[in-house]
Length: 214
Ligand SMILES: Nc1ncnc2c1ncn2[C@@H]1O[C@H](COP(=O)(O)OP(=O)(O)OP(=O)(O)O)[C@@H](O)[C@H]1O
Ligand SMILES: Cc1cn([C@H]2C[C@H](O)[C@@H](COP(=O)(O)O)O2)c(=O)[nH]c1=O
Image 1 (cartoon, rainbow, N blue to C red):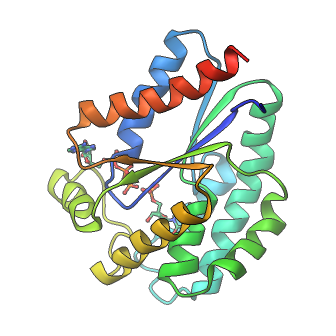
Image 2 (cartoon, protein in one colour; image 1 turned 30 degrees about the horizontal axis):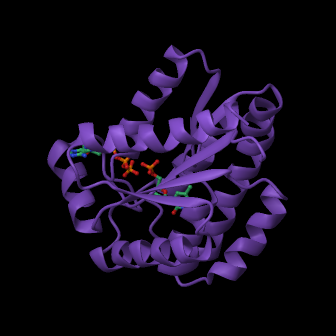
């Protein structure tokens, strides 16, 4: 069995990914695992700058393909500068969003087509795919309510898309779950935070323990 090194977290806005990943990171550290915690778009200097361009509310005129290419270029830089070096150093990488976000948001919701979006991303990432992806399953309207209610952060250009767009994103993720049943594991993200955290912890620890015993 190949080792689980690269774990990604996916789902609609406000699903709880960032909150849960922070706790998983602490727990893995506390049992002596060497972990890199990062996010997309962003994670490193150049990719954070690209993130700011993509998500700026002032950039309403951004073309869908430009958006897809910017996400892919941010991903390329992040991959070569942070993800691959961490994997080579033997670390576990926890990444808040990756390729599946591009497939669901740009490929399906934006209507660019998942195959075309996969092609431009293949140029960016080559053979590097996540070993395991955890999908935070929540109705998009519930996730959106969480971020508007909490005021946890400013609403960006993608958050401010119509509900219909976010429903398409959710539909896109459901297609990906069928397409990659061995890689993507779904968890109910509408449960209370403590339960979601425990469920995600069970998934991750079982993956890591089964490989430690192999
Ligand atoms: N299971 C939960 N139940 C209720 N509130 C939650 C739960 N999980 C997270 N939250 C709250 O929802 C808000 C959004 O959470 P978080 O930022 O972790 O989501 P996210 O998936 O990273 O969102 P985005 O992708 O839009 O950045 C936060 O205020 C967080 O405290
Ligand atoms: C990686 C990636 C992200 N997106 C979208 C998803 C979110 O709306 C934002 C990122 O914000 P978050 O608070 O960090 O979740 O960008 C996308 O459309 N395509 C992608 O590849």
